[in-house]
Amino acid sequence: MANPYSSSSHSPPPLQHPVPTHPAFIPDPPSTPVSPDGYMRFTSSPPQPPPQGQHQQAFYAQNLNQRAPGQPFVAGQYGSSSGYQQFSAPGAPPPHQQQQQQLPTGIDLAQWGVNPATAQLGFQLGQSAVAAGQDYMQKNFGGHIPVPLLKHHFNVSNSYVLQKLRLVLFPWRHKVWKRNSRVSDQGQSQWLPPREDLNSPDLYIPVMSLVTYILLVALHSGLKGNFRPEVLGGVATRSLVVVAIEFLFIKLGCYLLNITGSSPVTDLVAYGGYKFVGVIATIVVGLLTTSRTFYLLAFVYAFGSNGFFLLRALKYVVLPDPRDTTQQNMGTLSPPQRSRRIWFLFAVASSQIFYMGMLVRV
Image 1 (cartoon, helix red, strand yellow):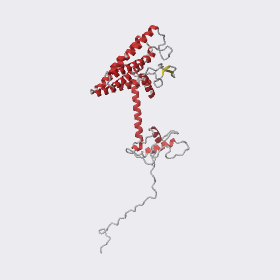
Image 2: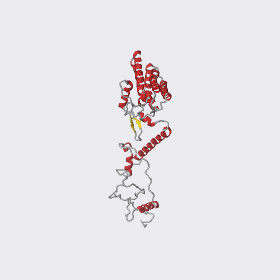
Image 3: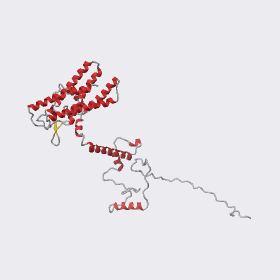
Image 4: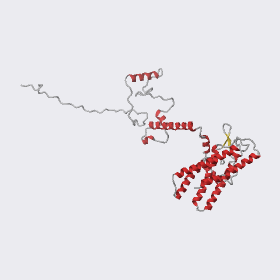
């Protein structure tokens, strides 16, 4: 009889699959220091795992040497278990709080999907670019452009602008034309800015009046149907040439009359730019009415008001008060010198009809 358990008829034993078992307790994942929910979402690939083996042993040996004598070693006190050290000064906030303090307040970057670290890097790069631009401008143009004087002449307010426009157009009732001054911290007397003194010249009104005049001439050309882009450049060039001619005329008169205590360039340019207010008023009257008589009356009034304004405002430049400590020329003028300077003032006021006549011809 053949053996049923022989090798030829032997069959493999039946397979037994393992039965799955569930663990009784699953520990929570460790929380990251920058996420309040315990998880951190990376915009790029996560950092590589810390070095193992000998490098990690050397790391713990270095941390063990840093602890005080007799103090037990606690994991995570001198370094994290991941192999990265975290140092902070006594009393300093955590690193994630320091990062949030440097970012602009009131902006929740997480709602826009922006990583705070990336936003902080961009914010620092922007500050560095602005600082580099300011340094470049100061090094290359700081010696040629009087930045402090420009800041002084653009220090205006809304009330000053309204009152100054009224003074330029209606200077007849203004009584006090003397500029006010104060003593600086260095003990030197200096003029008050336009915001604090109505009689102080500014550059805001002349610059805005020049721009308004150019646009108004372009509008006038468009209403006539002969507007071209070259009109803007031609009007701007003509305006600047008129201001330059008047400035050179005043400087030449100050040189010939030996007026050493004259105002800086910015003051004279500001006084020369106030004529655009009267020119704009004349052109507006010409646009609103077709009467040639009203147009001529508006021009005569604008010329008279601007001439009277310059006659009174430039008096402290041509005829400085010897008691004024802000003026460099403290000598007493002889009667012939005073007479020549008065005639020079009238020449400056009378020449406005020539300058304004060139500007109103549009």
